[in-house]
Every structure is written in structure tokens, then in C-alpha cells.
Image 1: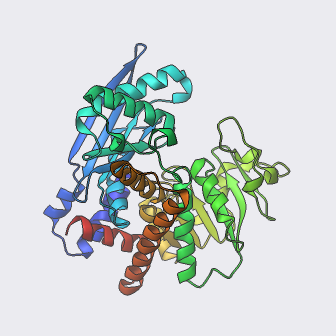
Image 2: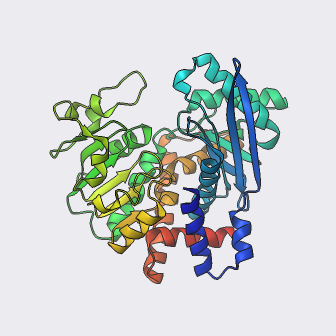
Length: 400
């Protein structure tokens, strides 16, 4: 993923005429924090990469996942710099994580892990410097613990130091649905521009966590879009008549699992990797990075791919898809709903305000429609792929 991100930046910068020294400086992170956290005698590698603050404070989530490593965090921090610039936010790019499987820890151990992470980074973060947020396997409760520890460590109140907080602790309306909703906004704006909004279109979706669930739920507002397949890491469920997530059977985690959906209970579970090769008009990639690579790109049958996860298409696969005239709605815009609403939460915190969900969604849509339209125009004007266009716009802002 790091190679993919840096390669796309390098190509875009070269097209725009920037020299090698400027490109290398842009690829280099401003700061990297690599440390260990010990909980109950076991040590866990921890990271925070602060990539670029040209446009504003670093911004990016913190993930708890066993595969977290410095290369992944560097890549995600780099992508966040591009993402905030692509949607024209006054924020930079950062990312953090701990190499841990939180399912193997008690709630008390997860809290201690979160607090020690925040305590270590306290001198390097804050509302004017670096604003972490939830990511994979982290949530509002974990962020609340981090805020509490950060404020205790520095002896001051700073609710804007983190976003993705609980509502009672300064969180924003609309945050839970933001990334999924943002993906729908981007897709709909693209379909309008291509004259496809009046045509019936089928959608297959890889990944059904919080992001995928909310994408599917918001997508129900557009009757021409029909979800016909969903998958998780174990299985794919196909229902040609359509899957209605509003009838979801909720499970203890709060977000429905695909197998708990009313419309999938009568279907046969098939292999997980089937999802990328299904015949559908639109394939939404809402799982993890590198979902489509050289190994499976030839099996893709969709005409439009939506990068709702970070870096779900490898560079080699992207080139193959581009040669086949398959449009990719890039993650730096399609996946930006979460960071946009995080930005709106930060603004509310700094102003001491709390906006309605309708107002948050209005501003989210306004920002994403403007970003998508600018990407589509640049792509048309210069005969670029959508990702190339988005990266050019981002780089012009970062290197101005």
C-alpha cells in the first residue's frame, strides 16, 4: 500500500512538473513516533506517523489490529494527507495504531492500552497540532478514554484534541454513518455526471462492518441502486432480488453481520473471494487494503469500483482496470466522509457548539460534491483517470 500511494503521488507530481527534490520532500513524513506499550507483562508495538501539516493540524485515525506495522501506518498517513487535500480541508495527514488483537484482551486491558498510547503521545498531539480519531477496532469509548488521559497528562481541557468521541463528550451528530454516507454521496454525484442516475444499477459490496452497513443503508434512498451481494472475511451472500439492510437483525456488536440480514438467511453462503468476481454494475470495496490485486483483477466484472476502504486496489490492478476502461472512485474522495465529519466535529469543539445531524450532513454533502465535481472536471479536461485527477488536485494544494 505504501508503494501504491507513493507511486501515485510521484506520477501525479511528475505530470505537474515538480522536480525530484520536491517530490522526495513530500513523500517524507514530518515525524514518526515508534514505541512499545506494556500491559500485564506483554509488550505491544505502537505507532503514530505525522506526515504533512502544510494545510493544518495532522489528522488521522488510530487502529488496533495485529497486522499494524510502520509501513502500513506510513502509507495510511500519506493517504490521509492526500485525502484532506483532495477534499480541500484545512488539515494535514497522520495515522496511528497498535499491533494488537483487542478481541484477545479484557475491556480493562484495552482501556489501559488506549490510555498509555494517549499518555505517550500527549506532548505531540492536540487540537492545534495532531487530532487522532477512531479507526479499525477502535470506537467512541476508546477515544473518550484517550481524551481523558490526554487531558489528565497535560492538565488542561482540550475536547478538540480527538474526534470520533461519544456524543456526551463532544462528539458530532452523523459521525457513525459519515464514511458510508460519504461514499454514497460521491457515487451519486459521479452517476449524475455520467447520466446514469435514471438507470437501474446493481451493487455488490465487499465488507459489511460499520462503513459497509451505512453505505448500504444510505443507498436505500436511491431506488435505482440495488444491493445484490454482500461479503465478509468468511463468506459471500448473493440475492439477485436485492438485500434490504433496513430489515437487519442486529447482533451484540451493534452493527449487523451479513448472515444476520433478513434477506441473506435464505441464501447459500459462498466463498468470500467470490464477491470481487460477481457480475454487478458497481463493486464497493469496504473491507481492507489490497482487496483487488494482480492475482484477482482479471476476475472483476463490475464497470465501476468504489474505494470505500483505504487502498483496496493495488497499483498494478489499478492499471489493468484503467486499461479496461473501468472507473475507480478513489479512496481519497470516496472514503473521505469520516475525516470530513471529524473536521466538522473539530470545528464544533473549537466553537463550543453542537450542530444538528441535518446540518452536519448538509456540510458533508457540500464538501464532497465540490470535491467530486472538481475531480470529474480535471479528469475530463486532461484525459486522466479519476484517481490521477484527485491526486493532482491534492498535490497542487500541498505544494502550492
